[in-house]
Image (cartoon, rainbow over all chains, first blue to last red; front, side, top):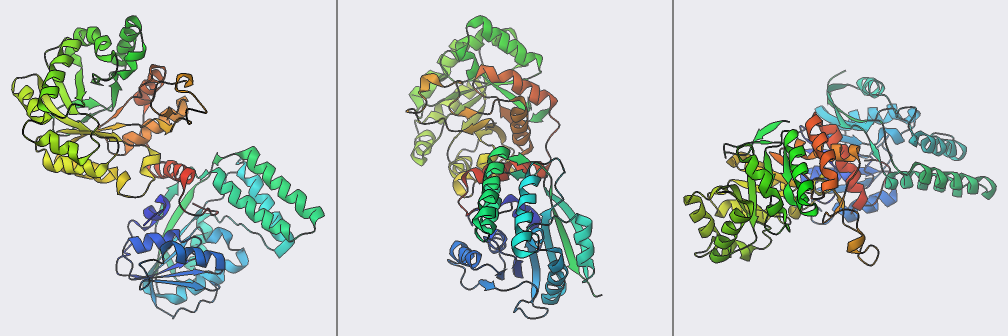
Length: 241
Length: 294
């Protein structure tokens, strides 16, 4: 399977995937879906609320996996999946794009669809160090999102906070692992974040949107690339509450 | 400097091997100094080849002076008996020594070459004969382009004791069988075959010659190398953390002192940092649409 990141491989390394019914919550471009299929998952539900991402996942891993891959466009707070139907849930880089108000509902929904004793892997970024230059781009992205949507685009949750939110829904931490230290924010990643800013800028009057987009472009070129912060992986097991 | 068992050869090699091609670019006095510097850092494994210009000749004086302290690897690109036999004697003459510790079939690229080498009248016959005559001690192989071919060679050459192949974060981050040197490392570990890593310090290809003429390149390497102390330390630590027995130093003498320092001070590299380097390199040439996270 092409392009399964090391972060995904490392996060799944000690999880039972072969023969399991899996859910990638927030499929993005399907990195974890690709990893789960490569590791022998019986079925993978790739759930995303983004039609472009859904199409990308189908295109990327759909060939030859028609009997194992189900791409679903749905809100993660209320998926069409049956209660107690999934062995392994993954949320790779998902939580940082969930506003705090949605996080609890997503944790509850993932607990609903998981089988008793089911497993969950949550991979995300620790709060970046305050001296990280990338923070300036992330702050701009959040400011633009607040103006347009009234909510932040990015929220970095400390590991203890995520563990506590999921614990409220029966998820018990089995272990924690550091996936990346430092996190390499490459030019490509920064460009992707600048694209998000440009997306918001397009929805604003030119007088605000154009300078916003220009600031994003300036930040990307000023930062270039940066190594900062860490990415962690939390492995949970669902217990009765 | 840390030493590691070179497979089951009985040799304990330093985790850095001196790529003696670096001597080719120096006058004899400078070559002597570089060898002294390398030995001062405790390096006990040298690698050379007859195709590296004058490297054998320039290594000779200091090699003879310190012969007992150096485990010497040499190579041949000959594929048939006559050529290989001739090259072994030529290298012994140019180096001015009686025995080469490790003699490697160099730069294996095609399955047909392996057929020729292993057939009656192939290079292996000459190498085994030289071993019987005490001219060489161990048999190895180098290949720059195809992990599967290395695995085939391990299957077909029972007395193969070491293999040399490229390993760096760019290679480690690529998918597909043509980059699967991890399989080679696993196989070598299982069979007691020694492993030597090359291209650990490669940053990328040189720009096309119409943009940068070969004569205008600032380094002698076949690739553009990393060239900062931090970058070199990172690349060395990464390569040494992959399970290689030893990492070969880059071919440009200007880089050797930095690499010696990195190898002397190495304290290993944890997995999260190894992954960070792979992820960083992967995004340089990603086949996957870009997204926000790693």
